Length: 295
Length: 238
Image (cartoon, rainbow over all chains, first blue to last red):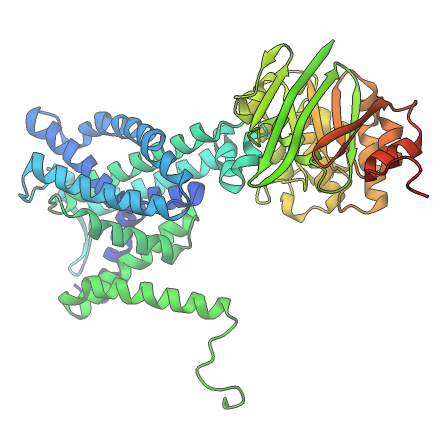
């Protein structure tokens, strides 16, 4: 692998992180909920696809026809039964609730599916690649995920900007009380937002599980990557999420190019650098030296 | 015909008893001005009628139906709309998007987006601008237009002149004039007594959470109103 190829693979990997981060960004943007169970919910999607592919002759891709509508329903019900109650308890309660959910999900998955490592079949697309030169390859599967991420984000963009539901989502996100005074059922809007978030998480989880091995405790690692992508891209911004995913992916593959061990570290370093840089810009410059000592 | 009937309504903000045992009837088609000093409970009363504030006791009956326990969006669907104090536009949505949110009410009627832009011509050139970029008067017009798009039978206007320049207030009231004359039932909270008396058919005055004076706008003397407003007994003012 050369450097240019590492960057290219990083960009493609960014598609997976963006897909994973979309739901996280949406839920934070609309309800100010930081969903710590997001990675684990993605895993539930992967395990549902695993069940379907193991017990039927369905391909993983076809299983999405069942997994995604199922995820929409789960998200809707999750909001109305659990998250809505926790939202009424103040800002910190949803954080605790979703943390609890993360633990419950991981342990339930372990109980039903054993702690074994699995992987989902990805078919011919999973292994094929374009060979551009001897040092330059584009794996079809990663390109597919990036295209999917752009498609999902584009679809959400159109939904938010061009439809009545989108206007209601944005209005409720800005000021739920006033939206109610205009006839918007804020509970329903929140439930729809969570349904979409859970469905995108499940989609990301299935593709993640086709790309690499997973076990019942893979959720938190995926959560960290999704969270880093969201923060790098700017909280609540959809296209920022794509950019954040790509920056994170490139940082990881370039880190791995330096030394294979630095894969995750590369991402963390860029994440921290962005956090510090943003703090500096907001404060109008961090003063490391006392005033007057400069120059 | 009575459109809204409030019976023994009580509302609190924590320990503060903001609305005390209020009985009120609003007839279809009338414009009722709700006046009173700051902190008299006018805003809380309007918000409780609209469902944005939970009453601690009492009943609210709209068009013969008990709506006391309904959420705000259900009341909007029945035809109760509140233009909240401080405009409360969605800052990142454009003016037109702000207006179109009201389609959530699902009430068809004479108000359409193009219709309100005709009634409030100052908004027409601003329809693609972010609401946050508007001046106070423009925002107030947009907030009223937005509530009208829910095609309400009862429109509650809370301090539409608050924080606006006098010329902007004139503009807002000029645009409201056709509403006062048509069949839309309006309850309006207004600090400016002169203005309240000139547009309303009936006036009620609140003092420390209670209704203390009620009468036809033409029959009340300014003295009666100011006495009730400040809670002065006749003669004690001198």
